[in-house]
Image 1 (cartoon, rainbow, N blue to C red):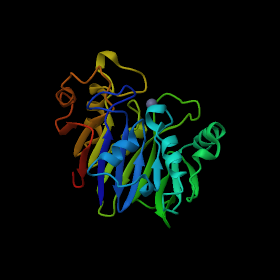
Image 2: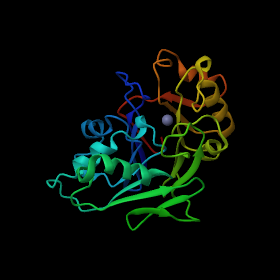
Image 3: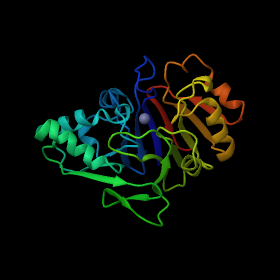
Length: 272
Ligand SMILES: [Zn+2]
């Protein structure tokens, strides 16, 4: 079972229909909050497809540590500091090397206020070319397992805490796959993650003529799709420079498959 709720389909600049990045993924019964950008928690709680309480979040996955992809970590930890919330399950944070230092630095700033009151906080650094499996409720590296999360290297600018940027390929027990680019320009890791995937959730931040290093444009998305042949493509991470364009038509100049633009609160369920 694999489904994706798009909480935020924009980039760093909030737009009315495209708020900053955030995704809620359900994989074989495991809920994953992916890239909790600014406003992610509010949108997850307000959505009819979301959660009743942030206390139900057990896993947070980060593609990289730029603020538009992780700013709601502090509000989440602060909410879980409240003793009125009942869960005692561990909260696992999964992200690139540097995540532990990032959380430590946040704790320097906020102290115990961002320690969950009842829940163990587990910070796990992951690397490209690893596969993750939810062993005993926590995600751990499991060589040879092809369901779960395959981690690949994305090509994006460094953050202060992390030089490595990640993209992901999720595979459920029925064999359906979903690939998320994170932030990345065209690169080999993205090609590996996207090959023959059922759903490619790929950033398309800027127009071709405003191409920014570390990001995709309609031309590079079309090139990626032509090479990897995804069954369905969902474009996301929109900046104001692309929202007036017919992005799917531009991508279709290079790839004739099923292409849609993400919108906030869009729900996609396998087989997509
Ligand atoms: Zn970024």
